[in-house]
Length: 202
Image (cartoon, rainbow, N blue to C red):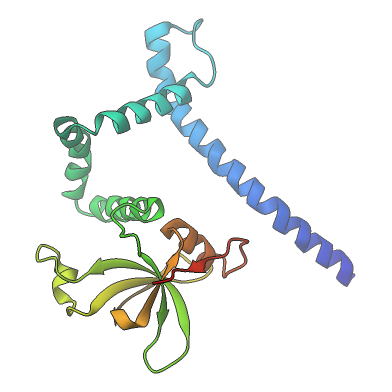
């Protein structure tokens, strides 16, 4: 009986990530198809429309927007809907959280030494964290709260979407060669992933 449960759990560990990934991709495909299909049918007609055209056009639109955002005027135009949402109560919190998560996962606005090992003062315990703010930026509220020798570090929690933002002396952190997305994946999975990080030498 114990072996059967062991094999069952092992099988679920293999299948569930695949099933969840497929479910998320399927949800994205169905959502995009539901939104853009009526537009394409109105343009080309029902006879010339084929499944997948809506999603291909969505990818093409994303590529076009990303490419055209290099120019300042167009970039401001693409940023306009986000600015309007940021002025709406409740929606601004949801939108801001989503954009912050995407920025963190993509490594946007992070320094080269953004992923660090944090040694807590007075102990030998070390945690993987992501540097989110440094001192010296007068336009940033959090940066103004930091002392000259301090940085703000986000400490993600395993098997959760939460974490802690701590302000620690620079002497307590050690940069490691890892991207923010890899660091989040490693900590959220409680270190069960296969990727290993190497400490940088200075």
